[in-house]
Image (cartoon, rainbow, N blue to C red; front, side):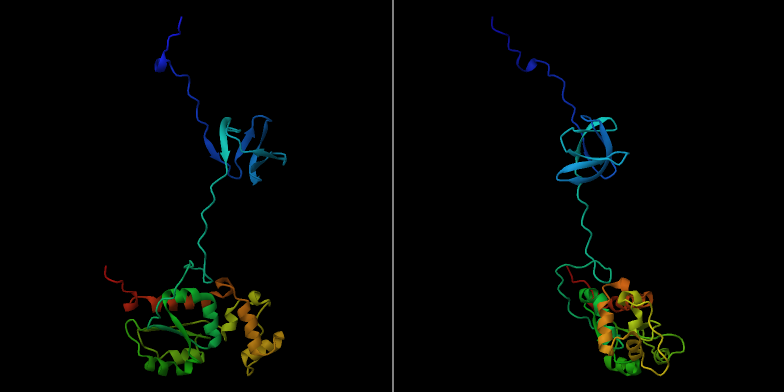
Length: 275
């Protein structure tokens, strides 16, 4: 007798429960039911997971489906998703703009006292300045500051930020800048005799900057005390020791950041084009 064809009316058998996938993060405690070995995930080797038990013993296990127990329940261990890459940082600590094409230079400027100051600012903030379109120019001393400001002709969207060495109460530099009364000019500075001192001594491989006797040019005295030869050679050593903002003292960092904020705030350069 021909068997009756029940077709689709035959009750289906019990469905298999889906075994969950669990990311094998370091520290996760899992058990291999076949061997009874129980331990924490420590790393991956050759596509297998390494577990370490409470006695410090390690064993490797393949990542088989439903191959482990976690909290007594079957799971499939999988490699954790890779953490998103951190954005690249510039020497100043800002987020680096990849494929940067420098914007057209602003009318606003940052002035620094000399060539070494300009090179140091470029070393740390060069990327940021190109993003913002800010040009840094050596002033060759604050003695000519008032005249240079008059020649420059400041105004809205044409600001000046000025970085001054040894800007402390009673110094020659502080007296020279006291008379600057222009809302479009910001003067900031640091307390060091020379911008070299704004570089942390450890970054250039010394314990401290030497004390230079009065009457001796500071750079000459430093190079003589450290055996660095001429100031030009000494400066190469100093600049080579600067890899980023962490190599600079806080007063210089704060002074330069304030100037960048000042010359990039407002004005026609920041107006957005009409949609």
